Image (cartoon, rainbow, N blue to C red; front, side, top):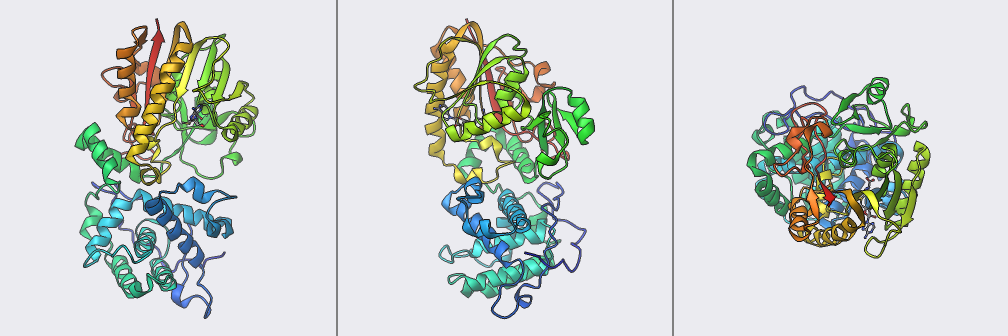
Length: 481
Ligand SMILES: C[S@@+](CC[C@H](N)C(=O)[O-])C[C@H]1O[C@@H](n2cnc3c(N)ncnc32)[C@H](O)[C@@H]1O
């Protein structure tokens, strides 16, 4: 679908992303103009209408029905309206939904300021429609009048939202007019997180770090690569910089299979924080190593690159296909096993084990802003029980003197610090081997007093420096005595 170009540039004065952080216009650069109500021929939707409708649907499905964005965007089984869109409109939908989730707290506060009273629950998609339009007006490269009129059309097309068409029109026009002066936009917006998660993080990390994490979540993260070798060389060739312990951080976007080095297998996409646990196992030349919970294989590739004879185990046959294809592209090898670790037994013990246990993934919200809405407190409890079981079982697969790194991409203590404290209290034959700053590129801020690795989205300049931040990861290194 071709959308008309926007009729005027956005105001140079931008709303801020909380505590003075400048909000950046992001997204695919779609100059979605389109006169909306006046733009379509009679009886035909205006250009851009389908994309806005799909965006509001998907946003609602994530927030109210706890569906994941991966499921909604699946090319074979995802949202049917999304699948019917042209690639350009799919990109626009993704940009709108990601920004609306990332900035949900701000949008709620801004709209509350413009509404006399909260919108009743039973009004269908009114709130989703308002969020989809507001995020375009405030943060995306879309002409205000197009965002407003398409939202009005959308409200008019929904039986339960129709009575609120006038309200949608009035609120969004006022937002477009007053966006530079609205007080909530320039203040520190509230969390935009479900209460259970906000409460937990404030308690776990303290008010100041919690605010810093929220600021970091507002920004779209940079693209990080793990390289087989020569990080400086790849950074130069791809126009990036070396961060953390040798990851290459790029500001460029786009399909990575078109970037230099992809086809030659020089690197793979992996958040810089996600690359740290495997690095804690050091040089593995000639060692027998297990990558447990391996798919899609980012850490398998690291262990192979570090010289190990790798056995990669995962329960999901489907996800293991990606391990095979990734290893093939990278020219690396590993023994790949489809098995449930709860019933699997290796033939021989290992010198090194990496256990990247299934977890709530609350540390990946920078890249997956739906996570806050698709996870529930009960998930943390259920997953913590699985992690405890896997950890107790697999640590016995180490040779004496062997090392296991346990990690999760979770920000929850139950999936990190508490797991290790309980294990050490229970198993006297296992000792903690603290992480040293030199092993993780000098990132001392990411090491806890106990010697655990604990990365947070606000680390490495997240929320304060352009293209800063790390995914939230926990890792601990254990040695079998
Ligand atoms: C966090 S992901 C692993 C990411 C991977 N290590 C990487 O770096 O690319 C967790 C994985 O655990 C696997 N998994 C979950 N339960 C499992 C079990 N009981 N046995 C084996 N694998 C399991 C899932 O299929 C999923 O691929």
